[in-house]
Image (cartoon, rainbow, N blue to C red):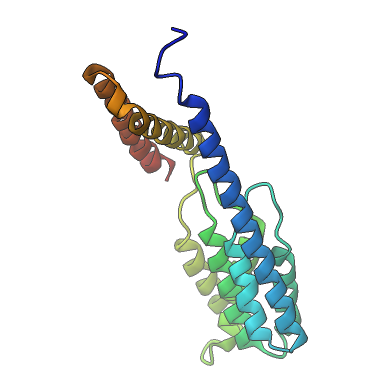
Amino acid sequence: MRNDPLRRPLPAILLLLTLFFVSSAARIAWIAHQQNRLAHDALLRHDTRRAIIHFERSIHAWLPFLSNPACTELPRLLHRIERERPELALEGWRRLRGAIKSTRNIFGQPNRTLLAEANRHIARLAARTDKEHRMTPQAIERELTGLLAREPRDVNRFWGVVQFLLLLAWVGLGCRLIWLWPRQALHRRMRLLAAAVGCWIGWLGALYLAG
């Protein structure tokens, strides 16, 4: 068992996976930082629309367990311009809503409170800019109902975790298979290949069940 060649590449595979995840996280964090800086530069030039776009891009660069200042600064900016520039504010809330929805992942929807706030503001501002039904309760309710109807169902967290673990297992088995393919007997290759295919099929099933 000590000289089992299947165990030899495991530390190298784990190191490669760790480096991949760390480098990806660093790149995403850098993108968010750069977009926030560009948004602040645009605000100094009084280019509100450009600032909204950069804040939106920053929110797209989402990382778990890390807060993004754009999630606070963009709503504050939109609150400030709602009275004077309602059409730009409506565009901004829609951009914010789209950015938040793009961060939905196997563990759920981040920033749910902010998403609900964006939905309320979009409904109210859309009704306000509707010339035929300006700011009527029926118009606001209709807009909000339409927004909520397009929301995807909640992610099942159990199957989300299963999906994540199966994905890691599939990647690890794939790396191991490529590493050992020329040096292994046929039955060991087939065993690894069958395990990798099983993880892939299981991942697809968990992806469907997670929603």
